[in-house]
Length: 112
Length: 112
Image (tube, rainbow over all chains, first blue to last red):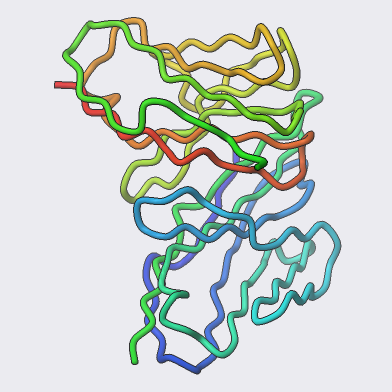
């Protein structure tokens, strides 16, 4: 089976740094996505990691350790607009196809 | 503009009345999928399609049907909706899997 864990809620202060963790247990691992979802809106793509290491994209960075089944999303210089849910999604290769499995999401509240 | 379009955005219906939620993408993507999103459970895949005439069940397919007669369209059909299908539904497409998924704006369905 597969299992993806991420914290349900986090709070942080504007201008600070926050790290959102995601741990997973799955067979046929073939990459990990992070998506951002504002309340009532569609998820939007943030990052994709398939190899170990850190991928940096502006204020957002994502890290992956395949051996540990662990990823994190790092948000720097937090802004109020970063208040949203952050979804970790693992790509699992099974039966000849890739399948995307989402965690329940982490709701981040940024306060002044 | 590249986009995934779902219709309707909101729908209230009665138990047992067949309905179809349409999904269309204009990016010539091969891979399309349907998800439902419920509080605390995250996005769960209902069905996916690797290409025209190729569809397969996701994690929660019971009570749903799909078809992929042409590349751009991937409708979701509820033959006999029940209250436990009340949810927020998202259609998504990607060039292939695993690559960045683009999501539609969502359909909030209420079955009474």
